Amino acid sequence: MPGGAFLLNSGGMADYGGGLTVPVVVTCLMAASGGLIFGYDIGISGGVSEMESFLKKFFPGLLKGTSAHAHKDVYCMYNNQALTAFTSSLYAFGMVGTLVASRVTRRVGRQAIMLIGGALFLVGALVNAFAVHIAMLIVGRMLLGLGLGFSGQATPVYLAEVSPPRWRGGFISAFPLFISVGYLVANLVNYGTSRIPEWGWRLSLGLAAVPAAVMVAGAACIPDTPSSLVLRGRHDEARAALQRVRGKGVDVGAEFGDILAAAESDRRNEEGAFRRILRREYRPYLVMAVAFPVFLNLTGVAITAFFSPILFRTVGFESDAALMGAVILGVMNIGGIFASGFAMDRYGRKLLFVIGGALMFTCQVAMASIIGTHLGNGSKMPKSYGVGVLILTFIFSASFSWSWGALYWTIPGEIYPVEVRSAGQGAAVALNLGLNFVQAQWFLAMLCAFKYGAFLFYASWLVVMTAFAVALVPETKGVPLESMGHVFARHWYWGRFVKDHKYGDDEST
Image (cartoon, rainbow, N blue to C red; front, side, top):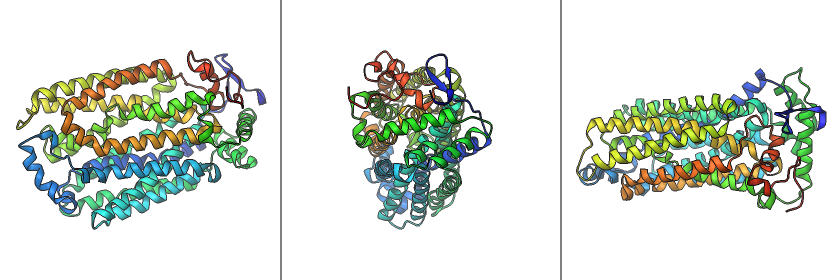
């Protein structure tokens, strides 16, 4: 191995040295601030959709119909496809933005992609704030979606490529942590602006420009990653960037040599990354790129993330109480992410999947039991049971953040070989945003049709995804990116696809 790097656990996986330096902490925090954009919009969408001033401006028919529906079927009070399009259009264009970013990131670099994403989100936030009709509102959401796609594609990979291997899980989890912070801030903003008649919703939507500006400023101040610079032939800048984040006294020769070797392996393959990831030796990475976003959306997080205020209204809380419930939900998200960030690099990834899956399953089944028993046509749930649903939602949210909420960004961001890294991450984020679109557009219709059965639907999938994580997701704690192939090569199942040598064979097997 170039430069004489020593091995972790005598397993053939290099530990290049280097610790927590001020530059790497500052750089990663600035990059992770892109998660503020994602989280703020998730929180704002649900809260604004429940504000009477917003509904009066854009969906007056729905506002008149909610009181009528409340006496017929509480599950269907807010089932309106035009209203859900306000939320879902962002994710549809986020998918488009991710695919575009995946195609151009190799040429312009990850830093530039994050900068473009922040700028698009900034413009979209301003368009939404000044919207005068639904068409203008949707255009703003489209711009927000494109920005979200760009930042979501580049940021987790940036964090994986810059952070030290021993603390990579914690650094990558800074991205979902900022998502949770953005979600909390959005719900606090909604709680305050809901008291402003007529134009409070404009302030909620317009303040999305603040996290966008933070991201633009952060992306403008940080260097690109060494791997990205090497892929563009800027070797001197790449070595300087690596030295900066690892510390002045650290010998980066071994790590830089492996980055060069990985980039050279990439250059020997002339086919595009999206075609390459379809080859047999990359099968595990393709499966992860598909499975993680699919399972993330089947946790049932759509219930708590997109429509928590509406859900709380459905089970009997007034508007202010519903918005405050969403605020507490944001606090639970942050607590779960913090706990996950500390635990995943100490105890490994699999333990988080098991604990989170068990708790989420329990909460979904319990919520289905309470809602199915005490909520129905023409009935109002007793307050004590409504509080029970609220508490179960809080526990579910913390459990999700502890497990899939953090690990969805961590594991896909760290497992891909450099030659398919942009394609793998791009495919995973694009599929996730596409499924977010489906969930946001159809969840309220699903709630109307399935009623409490919607919770049981998600609970059944939690069993499947937890089994998948235990059996087929390799433990990646402390493994350097350039040595990740060893983990898959030695896995009981994926070893039949990945060969146990440094960068794999250039020929399909």
